Length: 419
Image (cartoon, rainbow, N blue to C red; front, side):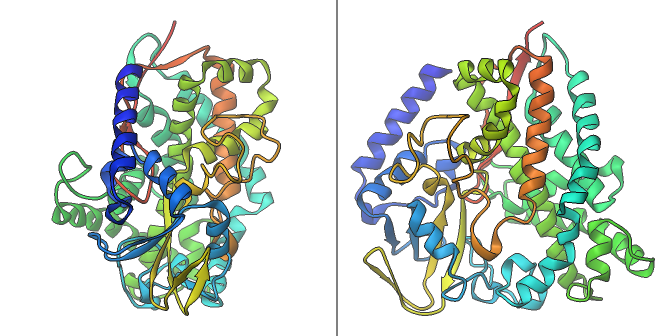
């Protein structure tokens, strides 16, 4: 497996450095599915860190690839808009009225008003209440894993833990919890051969069937007294309540994706990192307290959200380039987190970095990920429990990655636990 991966990586580097910069297509989902994206972004950081792509299947756009430039864009919501009416937060041009979008697709002050509705779910007190439940569930999941047999780590561990957590946050029927991470993947994947679904029609049909289940739950919670779950909070929140399913479902979709992807793909990504760096895993088994800094390093190293998009509200100079009003600007977090001008040895997996939270995986500014502490807590607890139990979880075949340029994650990962 290692020899094959090295050959693929070398071929990708050759292609990246042989391709003219004006022909770069770093938006190609296949680069992420094949895990060959790194040399393309490396070259942009070195030669053209604010890069104009004049033509792509997603239209023209700027690629912002260095850490500090991404901070500059993400932190300037007055200049770079997240508004769904201007295109939203992904490279896809999903223009829709603000009233039907989630709060991630709103600019201040509407953004803050809606975000505030669900903030109590992610408070310090709520985290403290959830921690024992997460640990209990993680322990049960791990204790039921087959030893000496090949199984899918993504399915048995990463998806199972995060689907249980999502069902709790929504107070969603526990027996149907697996539809939640599946829905998240459907939202974010690009249809096509080798992908999660073959066609856009197939994707839309399955998504409609999944999210229709939320309409009954919304109506039920809206007509009942307020409760401590995300659906109830949104149904009773002054800024988020609505009778129109198109208006309230957007925030349900956002919570489904946000509650699933960072944690799920970071759990899986950690296993990849530990398999590539077995000495690091052994050190953590000896010094489990290092998980405090290892967890943010895992999230940086994996970077589960590959990009976010903004739209320029005015002409703006960025690192010597003039971004024009109306231009699409893509912040490639997956590149900024490997920026060698800011992060020492960014390609290395270093679990005791002096500044472990110097990364972009949760974004920056007013749109910084609301659930970042919950994501870190789940990741820390599950790996604390894994370290207690297993001397090695070996990846036995190449993982299958999502065909997506937005979420950098895994569909499957065959592993075996030694007896």
